[in-house]
Length: 170
Image (cartoon, rainbow, N blue to C red):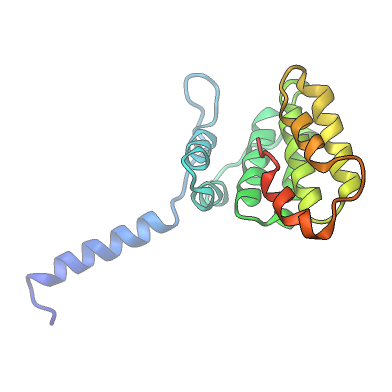
C-alpha cells in the first residue's frame, strides 16, 4: 500500500532505475587525449560486462568521426558482440576498426574479424584475417594460436562449436 512514507522511496527507486538503465555519456577528452566513454566501455568489457560496454557505446552523444578513437569505438563494439556470441553484429565493427586503426593496433581487429568470420562459417576469411593479424602482431602469439586451432583444412561440423569457443578474442 502506498503511503506518504513509502512514496518517496518508490519515486527515488524509479528515478535511479531509469537514470542508470540508459546512461548518456558525453565523449569528452580526458587529460591523456583518450575519450572518456571509450575508457568506461573498455572497463566494462574487461570486467566481463559486454552488454554494459555496448550500452555505453550506444548512448554516447558524440562519437568520434575518424582515426584511432573511431577504431577503438568499433573495436570495443566488435569484441563486445563477439562476447555476446553475435558474430554477425561483430563483423562490420571489426571491419570499421581495421579501416580506422593505426598499423600498431590493427592486428587485434584482424584477429577478432577472424573469430567473427569463423563463427559465421567462413573458414577461408577467418584464415586470411588470422594471417593478417599474425603478420601485424609481431611477437604476439594470439593470432598464430587461432590459426593452429583452425588447422589446414575445413573444420569438421562436430568440432566447430568447440573450436569457435576456443578462439581467443583480443
